[in-house]
Length: 146
Image (cartoon, rainbow, N blue to C red):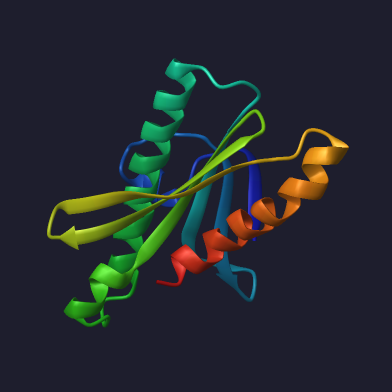
């Protein structure tokens, strides 16, 4: 399920973080909340301050989601915890950056830059760049299935 419009996730509320995500995708079963998944921040224009604050907010929010997921699934084998990856999407103007966050060790998280791409802005760039957009968007799913 997709939630938009500056939503505060349950794990962030539980950790007293009042971050409002522009886009949040949650996993639900039979209309019941299971766990928060991907977060995304969207800005009309890229500015250094907006880039930094949105990325920081997304990373801290995703850390809450990752920790909540690992607490919700206590039977996951310890060696598999390093394979749990949560994607983060940051859209600024026509540019998209995809990162992933995972727990490498107790208290140590790794933020990895997965891919970047731009949305086409003209007919010519649409013909040439659509494949890169499709690859970039599908990369979000692939990166979360590591």
